[in-house]
Length: 146
Image (spheres, rainbow, N blue to C red):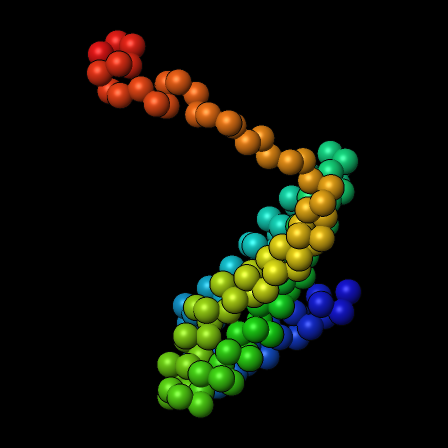
């Protein structure tokens, strides 16, 4: 629940900061808001669908990504603070709006990768072939139909 509150507050602050910088609510702010809401709705739907299908580990992955999407506005503000050190504020904000979803989702995939790695010992082992199948070793002339 804390991630949802932080995401909502972050979105509000991001809109206010953007409005103060560019004196209007324009495409990047609308994109940040719409992108966050659409991805969040899709993620919630996929999490609920996975839970209903009994795939709890998949639902857990979607819940992690859902938290990352909630964090998108907060990530946007953090990127803006960093970018503003090097670029003019308006440009820094636009760049932060564009980069925030990618960074937030990447941060969401990190715990999923760690969870998968911790369960790697229980995962099925891959099959190692001693020799590739014969059709892979054939030249184009030897293939049937040539």
